[in-house]
Image 1 (cartoon, rainbow, N blue to C red):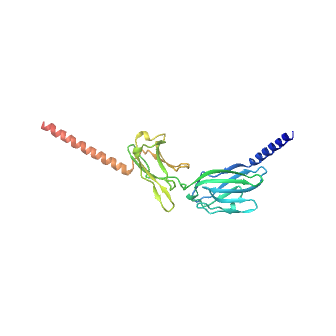
Image 2: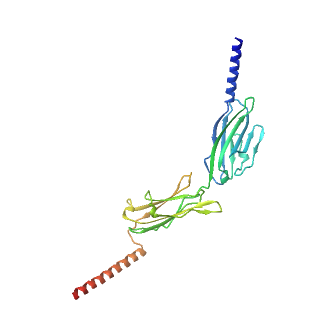
Image 3: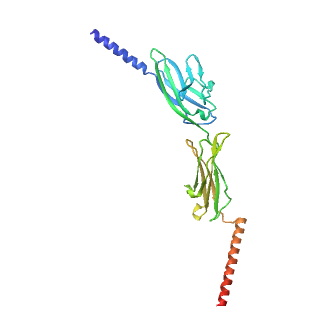
Length: 277
């Protein structure tokens, strides 16, 4: 009987110990997947001690500790490349990072530990990538005031600087432009801020089916895409005009004059041949 009581007491102690060891829980960790170069972000780490005694909250980037919070002790910040902590905005559950650079990209770990008599540690990891966001929509140049059937269209689209380099795509009335109509060159590197820009041209000849709707409009859209970010777009509308511009009118008159002169010459040749025969 005594052995049985001792056994039950031992099992109860082990069970209670296991419960204490597993009482520490990390309930939330937030690190943005992407951030803009030069910006500030808050990374958060929340936990439930369930009666335990907090020992410390430590933050690591790529396994290098850069921040430590311990109750009753001043915040400790450790210098590592790419990390600038705003201590006035940081505490037990969050760390404020400012002046982000490309070196700020990496794997972030929040590690929470409790004091004895039952020590426990929990941690989680999340990744953040620092990009250089485009600051404006792509710029479209080369659009004329009006078009008629058979007019050539020759336009350029330049994406805002970003890092990584943008991809640029053209759409005609909502459909992606054929590759033969698109001219592209490699991205241009801008060394002063380590970004890239890219210009892509679109060239084709208008046809009747291009102009749609009651207003006979042709819509061109340029889309700039940077991996991980929402695309940025610019749309321009080409109008079908029923009146010729002075330049086009002059061209039409010239073409008609040439055609008329050619026709007259042909008729003279035919008449001369008829007389000779």
